[in-house]
Image 1: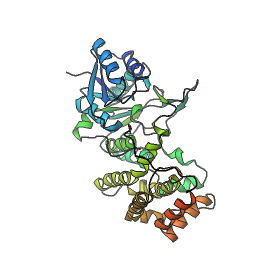
Image 2: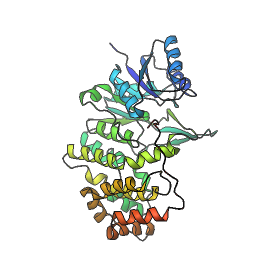
Image 3: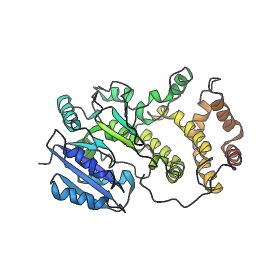
Image 4: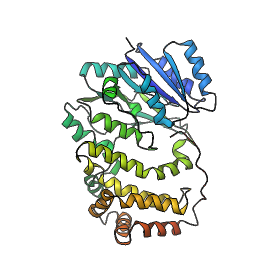
Length: 365
């Protein structure tokens, strides 16, 4: 018999924070759990700290592996987890003591396959945190309900979202923060369908894991308590220029992952992320101001993305409005001139500001 809950903590060079992360789980009001701390090829003292913690508490297990990135570390934890329920905790964040109790209790009482919580965010050492609430009620009782109310919050922006945006609804009001750390999962469902994180994706890997999982789920639930503490550290990965380069390079991979999910579901999901195809292409042009990438590689990536039939169809169908003139002009420019010409114009326009490319460092993704 394994523990009731498994808490998977991916760790990469987090020696400043990882002890607090682990102790936040050990202080849990729910006693029956295991901590699986995955040392993902750390080059600082992270591994030694984890081994010391494991030596003092039998509930802590340490897995050492070569660096595979955040998704690879989480997958490594899933491969050895034994709990009925799975939680994720990043190595520089913390749990509230009641997180496990509330999550296990709600899942057990409702029979749901997933429970989602609000999240508390602290930015760059600020004295006060802010709560990121849930944007909808996620008590979904059927797979059809999950697909109608939950999946659209994760997979991307639809043309309907863009039209609502033009009407005054903030675009991101239609999205849910995709973090897996605010959710509880059933391990049996994860293993039955071998749901794993896509290790080739740099950004949105959480949201796509959730999409893959929710497409297999029968029922979901939610709680109102913000029991996960997410800390944005100054100079962290989101702000890292090397990460921005990898985000640019992975636009095509992200598109292919969405398309694979759509194909598996018989084409039922494509309209849910159609607008994202256009917005991602325009974002690539905007990133040319700061992304450290050479002309040839950048042009190749943009061409491959823009040449995809699904992206081309989305460009033709994308709604335009005088309320967003810059967006309308950008879409029209790509429609009329083509992505290659717009890429050349953007490259020339941003030439005085662009930083020189440099070798991409192996960072945690």
